[in-house]
Image 1 (tube, rainbow, N blue to C red):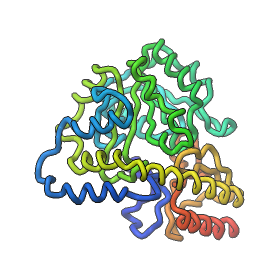
Image 2 (image 1 turned 180 degrees about the vertical axis):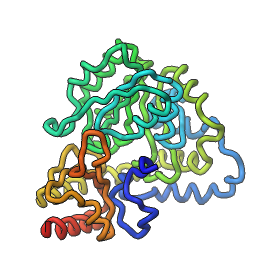
Image 3 (image 1 turned 90 degrees about the vertical axis):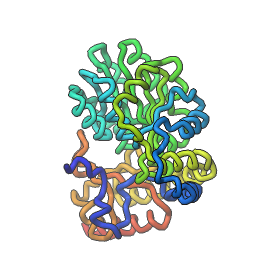
Image 4 (image 1 turned 45 degrees about the horizontal axis):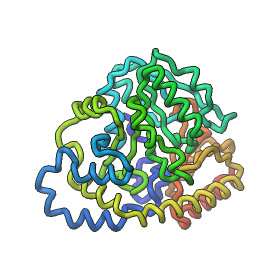
Length: 350
């Protein structure tokens, strides 16, 4: 069951400062907290199984028809349900990338191929992937920007991938959960391509941007009604709780919170990257709300930080990486300073 531990064991270390989970450094929005508190009296009833109000709010926020929106119990839930719904025989994803793509595909009985990303390219996706796309594939899963590297796919390359997938009749799922943290998010989303590409699925979640990991809420966008119907057929009833629906509607109305998060992440990402580089750590990619870095000085950096009450994400269990690679979330300045102090103490003594 170790595969379910994506970051540090926060329940086993409840007092630790957690940099392993890359959610908003500002925590759950106050507007969401108020909405949840005000809705407690309704929690004795079943949630809307169709998520009608939430779906309408998402459609308005993303500028798409409500029929293209389908909500789920977090992004991971939707990844597994897409795999079960489409029943692909052969799929392609990246290495390294978010491990749940591989697990979801395996659970659906799918044979999965992996396109390697290389350190010489700073783990950026290159056009070599185009040679892997053929009618032999049924599904491609991409994370943009990628996790754990924080590298976005070049916009022109992403559209070339989409076109070739369409030509080869391959469904393309693009996980955009970290797109809002990029400096120019609208330049990296494929939402505008949905109408022209029925083979495209865009995945989003409230987990990262709104720090709603415990509430579990994600959604997919797709203009193909057959795909939406197939995904619906693979879910249990009342899959999105009433608190999650309430929280999602409130979050989408809080544009001020999103602006503040993006400002904090941009400033603190620059600060933290600079401090890590001063310590001799190699920072790669890292354009989302987390830093991906390599430490050659010691191979047990996560354990040494844990002894000091700090959790980061060791990346040695990602395909294509080893124990020298780590990921750390961008948090508040005071928290980032604490991480820098601990790293300085460790690396000076290494």
